[in-house]
Image 1 (cartoon, rainbow, N blue to C red):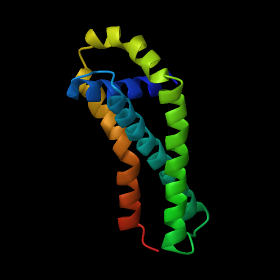
Image 2: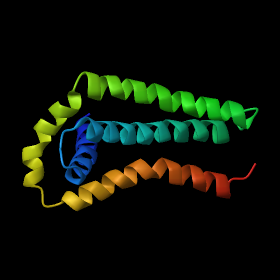
Image 3: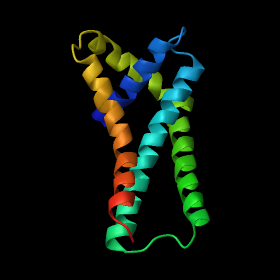
Length: 134
């Protein structure tokens, strides 16, 4: 859980540096939605691995697949909205890591790793689509 919080903090710190007000509602929503897209991508990647390699099947139509993906993204976005915005856990995470962040010499590396972890499921699904035809 601690690494997940630090990933959230890296995203939050990146968006807060780009905004004039560091803890405004827009920054908090951007961070929460980016994290929900990342977690949703990981869930869809695991689902695609299961369907492709274990079950050897897929959805019966693209519309059903799209409804499934949208429902996963929507459920995670609502869950993260409640956790981070309504309960204000993002502010607690920010206060927890801000002092350590100023002393961290690897700020850019940590942001790159966070971005890479967020992009890996989408790149992996693209590779599965390109290299493992039906």
